[in-house]
Length: 522
Image 1 (cartoon, rainbow, N blue to C red):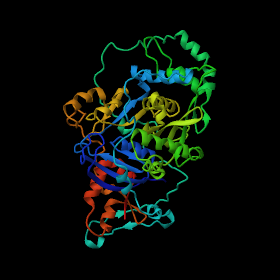
Image 2 (tube, rainbow, N blue to C red):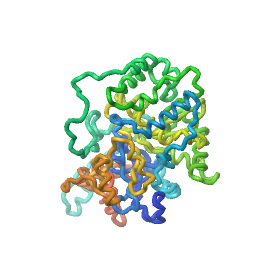
Image 3 (cartoon, rainbow, N blue to C red):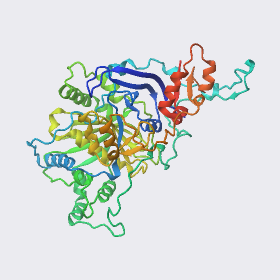
């Protein structure tokens, strides 16, 4: 049985903010994750956490200078805006005709996916130096039972079975406390505005089909020969592509979907060929290893040109720690996506070379965008916006095999920073209430954020965090390679009490995760 193992590092206060340029305005909590199941991380990001490499952090929303609200797009209902269509058409014209638009288009945000959560130096200082042996619980063969530790002190008799489990890095087994496949995640609670009557299509009538849509369908085979999306180098099956195209057909008075722009038949003499490959980055697959150096060189140029880093700063070590290392354990359940769950790089290959890489996590209920870097020579293609649209389309594709996977997480929405408001343009989208952890449509949040940069979105005054910590003693601890509840560890501990720190940790991760993940104590 594989469990998450984390070291809680407490609060980090008074460090530089990359959004408002405050020298000491940021406040966040963090922990170093040695390993983590995809379900644990899904539950954590649904409580406002986010990872940078193996460092997992959560802004302290009512204290930090620029509150960062977790934002998700409802990928299945996503509709392209006018500006999104411009970017998709620009890419299509470039691939099919070689056209490079000279017109000045709407300015693309400097960072399409970057999160200035914690400086790389802080993350580096937070790295763990605990040995692998200390992090590995003992085998069942060495299991013992801790009973009545304080019986001789006159306390009430208490029997506590302390279970010890062997970590198996090759086989991932589902935790009995994990969400049951097919059941909604606790995080899927959403606060909706009352629907407007009389809106929407007549569902009792079959959808109309346009002649051009029928022609598209006939040209599907040609499409597959010219433009492909691959998983670990294997082209997607033609029938699956057909299903995606069919499901995206426009009906009367409905705008085109992403697929209508992406999966378009190209002429035989198209000057360019774009291919998107999804490769597992942790643990690194053979394709990831084979393209590592080329990918790193793209990252290095991106950091130097776009972020003005000096030539010696974007090191391979930094690249590996930040964008390749991940605590997420790979999982490949039969009812999951073909590529499995975990951490991946989505590589954009143009005419045989990498021009952009989207770092993503594929989780039980979402595709979570981590970072994007690209070759600055292709900035004219608005690759930040284009990659986000491709990741939304990828989410919809994965949903065909994994029905619970239907959201696209874009990281944080920061309303107090105008340049970070662009994420709100991907509609429909929801923001996470920082107090009750329920999702609220962004349209209901914006008026509140105009009044105050920190806001509780859930307007039910009686609503509380349903996963708040109820029993601190049930928090799972890993101490001297032994898994035990905090109630037992507390009695064994020597030295000053650490209850305040454990209480803080448990309140931030919630009761569910605190009972599943192992909090390392030396």
